[in-house]
Length: 148
Image (cartoon, rainbow, N blue to C red):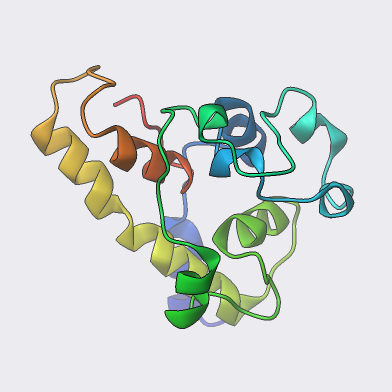
C-alpha cells in the first residue's frame, strides 16, 4: 500500500467501539436485524439497547438524529459492500475487514464529521448534555464521545 494511502488509516481514531455505542443507545436500537447481529461478537450485544423497530427512547439523548436510509442512498453514502451504511462498515472494520477504497471513503466521512464535535465545543458549556442533544446523538452514532 502506498504511503499516502496508509496515512488515512493513521488518522482514524474512533473514540467509541461499536459495543460502547450500542450500549449507550444508537439508531433507535434498530440498525441490525437478528440475522445481521450474528456476524459480530456476541459481547457487543449483551448490554446493547436494541429494538426490532426504531424507538427514539433507546437513543442515548432520546432524540432522532440523522437522515433516513433513503436520503443516504440518494446522497451516494451506501455502498454494495455495506448496504446498511457507515455503522455496518465500522463494525466490520473493527472486526478486521479491510477494503482500501471503501475504508478511505468512510474514514474521510468520519473525519468530516468532526465539524459537529467542534460545534458542540464552541456552543455548549462543558458537560451540559442538554445542549445540542441532536448533534450529540449524531456524533455518538459516528463513534465520537458525546460527553464533551
